[in-house]
Image 1 (cartoon, one colour):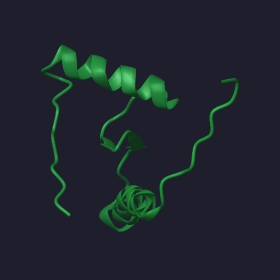
Image 2 (cartoon, rainbow, N blue to C red):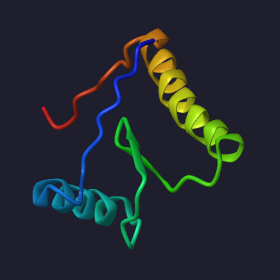
Image 3 (tube, helix red, strand yellow):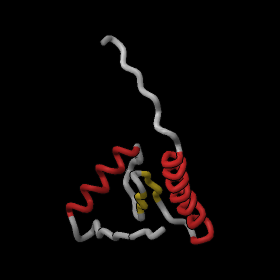
Length: 84
């Protein structure tokens, strides 16, 4: 798996600041802080140390990868229609 990293400077970009605020509010994370890591719509805020934060970020990524693998291997759900 290849993961791209995009860095936004909230000091230099009003648009980046606004996006951080909107995403933080949507995720229920207030007040917005840096660094904020967003992966597949999930947010992790803060960085304590490589030893502490690295495993948390890896877990965030692994949860998404596992969830995609699980959903791609499931058989399609049978749907029923009512009221016809």
